[in-house]
Length: 109
Image (cartoon, rainbow, N blue to C red; front, side, top):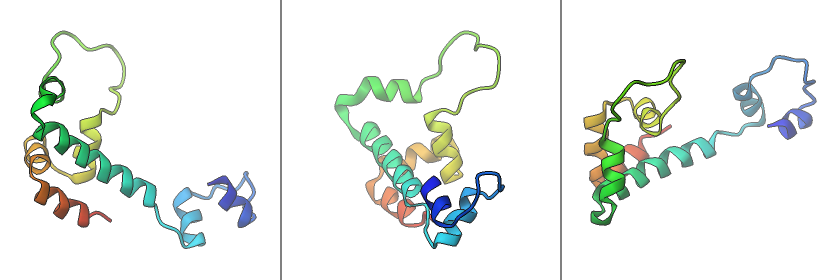
């Protein structure tokens, strides 16, 4: 992003958001789209695979005991829930069906 700022001659003291810099450069966030797509595809790969039973248990399971103090960190699943605006059951249903994944990915911005 800093190279775009240099090309546009935006000083580091100016408060210009990254979104605004990309808009001025006529670029879009392709990397974010690729990350969302690959995360959802990988989730489906894990949930459909028979050899990934341990990973499947880890993804769907809950950890017993007390959690540590402070703000919770963003989890892998919470990222997916936020991006695709659905709950866990809906997310797991989508991820298990390859056709459904393709539809959801094509509707991403």
